[in-house]
Image 1 (cartoon, one colour):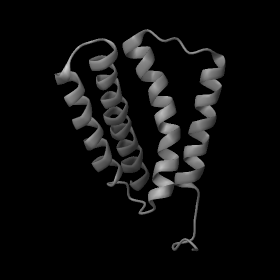
Image 2: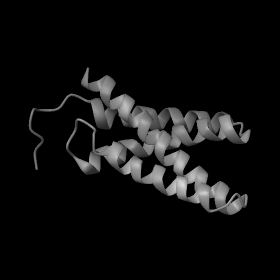
Image 3: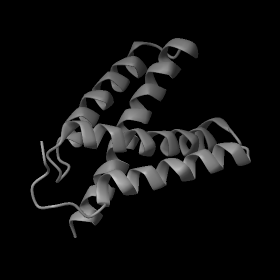
Image 4: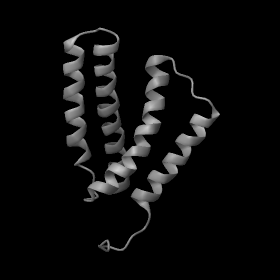
Length: 115
């Protein structure tokens, strides 16, 4: 159950961070205005909160693993909202990232991490 919660939180974090960055991009680069920029800033703040809800208490581990989720989410966001079409290298790279996320977050560990 913790793994499902963790995956759901990674997805929510990706929507908030990528969505927030996209809103700011739209506000500035596409001249949509301050409301879009403000919405992006709020979404990025929510991302920061969502990331703290992960069951693992290690900031470095969470953010490292989230990097892989961010890569995959960014490609999916670009496909859905900007007409981006990834090539096979984008897809292979994204899959490698997801394998990395799985190893970092869900590999069996001792109850207490050394260090």
